[in-house]
Image 1: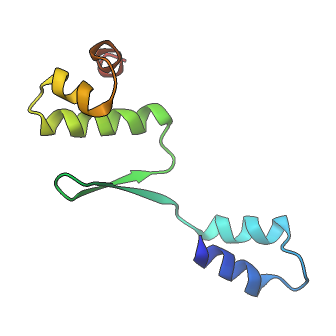
Image 2 (image 1 turned 60 degrees about the vertical axis):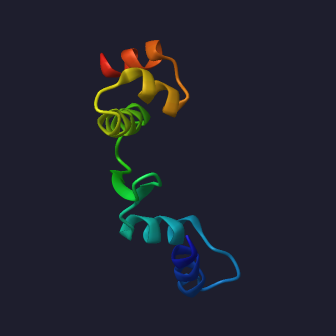
Length: 91
């Protein structure tokens, strides 16, 4: 974010940052979110073009793998019910 704002300030030729400037800068950026899983230090790269359901499913599968397929422990760690977990896995 800091890098984008810095570029916008330099790119702007007036006192205001225009929407054209913002679109130009953001068009160049490849947005990738990194989620750090703190228990084992594993970093997972998520492509920003994924849907919320796909993000959730990736995270659920990661935690499920860490618990060796144990759905009860996975649901507890994620703060969801086993039914919700089951629904995500069966969509």
